[in-house]
Length: 406
Image 1 (cartoon, one colour):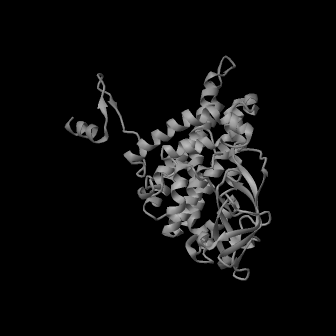
Image 2: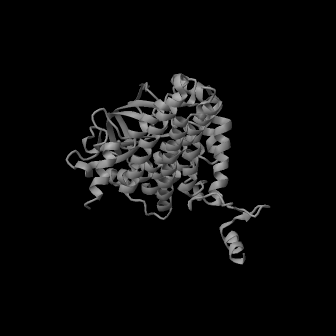
Image 3: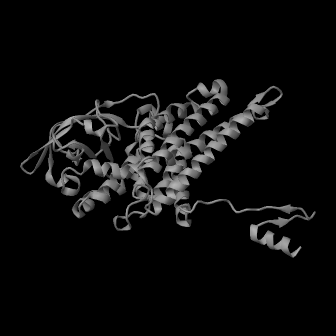
């Protein structure tokens, strides 16, 4: 009996009045999810519940999210969550991971907060002290919205094929080119543009130029792009026609570093997509469980049918595999040990799994799953892009394959 009670104390169990052993384990928490992160996550959850979800339908109809949301997010510290404290931030990417989880749990993948975060980290990692002081406060407060302009009509995953050119002139550069599929494109005040500063330099001829939109003669925005999903996402073409960019807006003040800068930050960007996929999977599963337990069929509910139970069990298993992989990658990220191949595997796995989960969940909704007023129908279009942006699944496979013989 002494040994038994020692085991109970060790494992957190107890005995009920009948003497049977009852296991009462503490809820699992990943190592990256510290008490501070949990508290911050609660702030993010309440923000999405109060300021986001009630307006999402209207934003989908208008094709973008109200600018006022950026200000509110900035006031709560959500936009600068992973910035150093000296710039008013939280100082940890774990805080941003918590936000992305809550964004997914709210049923959204459209708001470009992750892109805002990417640009902040480009500036943090490569910017001069003057550049950091100049741009980071506005990005953290929401007064400045940022975009990354890499993709072109003829150059997506292969950045070496970029046609946008920045010719050196007195005091800076003259920028010419076209970008497409740019998140935050209609709203952006600051655009991080990948351009060739050396036409013969290949990947070593690419530089990142920070274009401040206000007063930038020759900068034009195309019409918002219509998509099969992510209707609330602000996505645009951008045009640069003899746009003058001052020398001090060259990120890092050294030409030819753009390709390396982009590649170095991509593991975090790809992990961010995987993190949000976990939240989206939770949303899809919650919506579907609520539907099948309420929907009457064949003398009971849809949940009473064995096929429904099996499909939900499979979806839950996929969700937990996604969560475990993401938790592992975040633990590595905190230790600065997240490599390109592992982040690619995580993004590949999670983007595939979320599409499979949503497809099965929509099927369990029956005809209701085909109606746009249902969250699962909206999600069906939204999650498809997860296998495309941030690097297509095919590119992820190439990166993983190359690591096998490195």
